[in-house]
Length: 154
Image 1 (cartoon, rainbow, N blue to C red):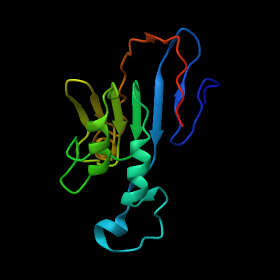
Image 2 (cartoon, rainbow, N blue to C red; image 1 turned 135 degrees about the horizontal axis):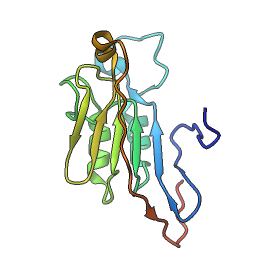
Image 3 (cartoon, rainbow, N blue to C red; image 1 turned 90 degrees about the vertical axis):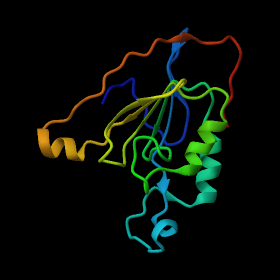
C-alpha cells in the first residue's frame, strides 16, 4: 500500500498543500435485523437507524469523494437495497459530494449522474464471474485550491 494512503473509518481525509482532494468514507450498512427480523453472526458494520442517522448527518460538506459500502436508496441499486437515511442526509446537504463511490449491490454495477454528484457502483462480483478480471473505474478530479479559512470537522 502507498505511503500516501491513510485508511480511517468515518473520518475526513485530505491532502496537504494548496490543492487537495477531500475524501470521507464509512463501511456502515443497513442492519439486517431491522430489515428481516433475524440476528446474523456476521453483522460487522451493520448499524441501526438511529446510529446510521447520526453517522450520515456528520458527513462533511464540500467533499470530493464520499465512499460508502451501501448506496443511497434508489441509486444504482435494487428496490430492497440502499439506505433511505443516507439518501435523505445527502439530499439535505447544501454542498453535495462530487463523487459517491459504493458497492453492496452486485446487480447494478455502473455510473449515474445528477446535477451535483456522480455515483459509482463498483460492486463487481457478477462482472468477475463473466469476465474473470476486474473492471477499474478511473477518473480525474480537478482540484480546487484550499480556502484560507480553518475548517473543523467533529
